[in-house]
Figure 1 (spheres, rainbow, N blue to C red):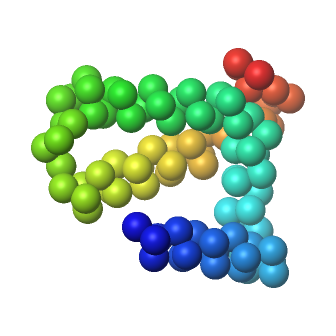
Figure 2 (tube, rainbow, N blue to C red):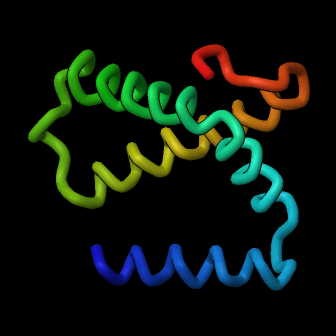
Length: 91
């Protein structure tokens, strides 16, 4: 898990150097509606793990896939929302 954290830190550092402006734009959009993103992330995780009863049934790789899927949804939805509205629905 520490290696994932280091890779994430390096990725963010790379964003500062202009490696991927699309991802940076998506992260900025998600950061501007942070409370909405946090609540949406929690709701999606509850839906997947609680609603589908996957809690404790997936291994570490399966859980990382679910988290990557949730982040993909958030990184697609946040720029769409912020292009239409100034604030998130719960900000």
